[in-house]
Amino acid sequence: MIYFFHSDGWVARLLSRFGQLILLNVLLLVSSVPIMTIGAAHTAGFHVLIQLIEGKEIAIIPTYLQVFRQSFAKSSLVWIVLLVFIWVLGINWLYYVQIDQVFTGWVLGLCISTMVCFHLFQCTFFSLARYNSNLKSILVNDIKIMIAHPFKSILLHAITLFPFLLMLLSAYLFIFGLYSACFFSISGWMYLRCKLLLAFFRKYEKVE
Image (cartoon, rainbow, N blue to C red; front, top):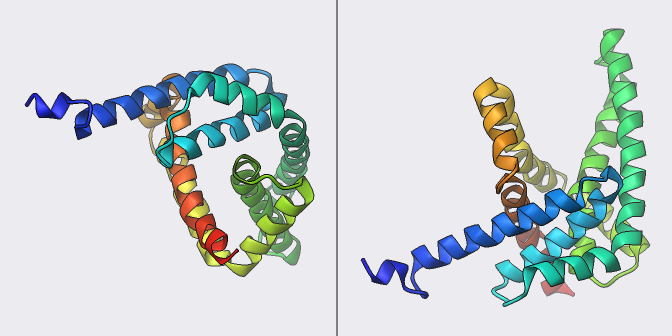
């Protein structure tokens, strides 16, 4: 029993990781209060999670704040463009649903555009946190990966969206999701995404 709570035991490691995620969750919430800073918060959060997953010892708060400042310009630019893109897509989806024309060629193009938008949201901030490349190269490479592996990309996004689909099944799950977001579910969701994206992108890193 004592071994379980030893510093090298799995229980201690699990509790330590849970505490790290709670701290990161607080940082993400506070730095995302102005909607325009969500992009920089995502990049900083991914950077911290990458370091934790790879077993590196880091000071979470100083590391987060440093990456937040350094990536603010690039991340904010991407986030603002995505917000505009999401707004345009939302208007178009609302229009076609209202006129009951959801099985047309235009809607197919809308589906592809929505997929591209979500893929960029999913991967771009991770790439900004992972790689020291210019924004153009990151965006081009992320699009190339989606085109080269459309089914893997769709599966990756489906797994990422699964928690939100669960929240829509029940009012209790929805309330629990909102409540847990105040403590650990935002960082936990990003942790899942980071693990999946690392496994996905490491194949290309090995090739390079």
